[in-house]
Amino acid sequence: MSTSESKHYLPAGSTASGPFRTVVTPESAGWSYSGLRVLELAPGGSQEVTTGDSETLVLPLNGGCTVTVDGRTFEVTGRQDVFSRVTDFVYLPREATATVASTGGGRFALPASRCGKRLPARYGAAEDVPVELRGAGQSSRQVNNFCTPQTFECDKLIACEVLTPSSNWSSYPPHKHDEATETERELEEIYYFEVADGPVGPGVGYQRVYGTEQRPIDVFAEVRSEDVVLIPHGWHGPSMAVPGYDLYYLNVMAGPGDDRAWLICDDPAHGWVRQTWVDQAIDARLPLYTAEGKEQ
Image 1 (cartoon, rainbow, N blue to C red):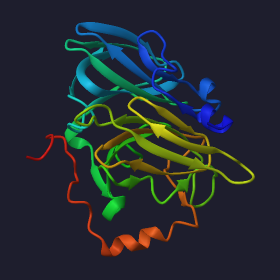
Image 2: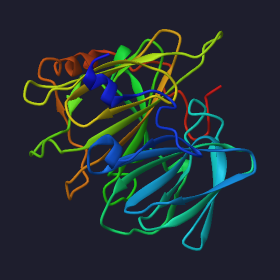
Image 3: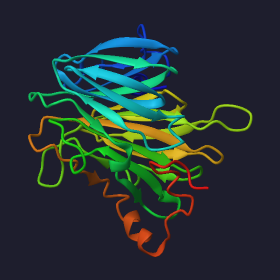
Image 4: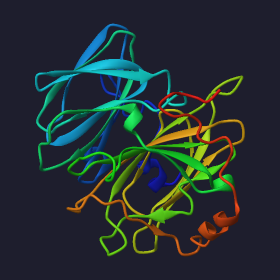
């Protein structure tokens, strides 16, 4: 493992602290905006969560919960796991103290970004999450756009979920978003992974990140459930779902731009691949599910 890879690849459990199975802060990542915690609650458990200077979401990975913040209580149905359905979620403003409680227990992702505005606490319904089918052929994937600029209001935070059927590639062609130009925005990004189990045990996937001579980064990581890859800059992709195992990742992005835009630039060596999708069908396995769950 290279020095760059060990710095930007965080194995499951390596950042655990107290009730949080994963903790990534701007300070620990070495950047300015993006963060992520994953809270684990036992059945009947509850946890006080403070947001500090960051707007934060409560996104069930498995299980349901109630979220109490700013004098309001939100009921969150959640889901069995990230491969079962689109989930509902809650937005927590900066400078808030919230209580997350779960009768049945579960794990709850808390994507976050430092921000300047204090927006109101809100509930996001699963039925309102646009499900996008992106790419074609073996580049087909599903994107749950629950917190993207066109779908949910935030000050800085951008977040989505990507589901890649087994044997397919996503985050492809490789792309970057580390400069502020007319066609690109500077965004720090966190990839949090879950991999579907197979008949005899946990699955694996792979993630590639590479840079330029001026801004080097070199990551080629085997990823398993609850692993994290940090992307401060550089080309990232593909994310590879190996045969037999569907791949999930949560993307958390934020940056200094005032317009909260997701604008990317393809690696010019591989951008041509997009043109090949015109004559290919989207993978018939997609969508893997919607807010109603899996299709029978």
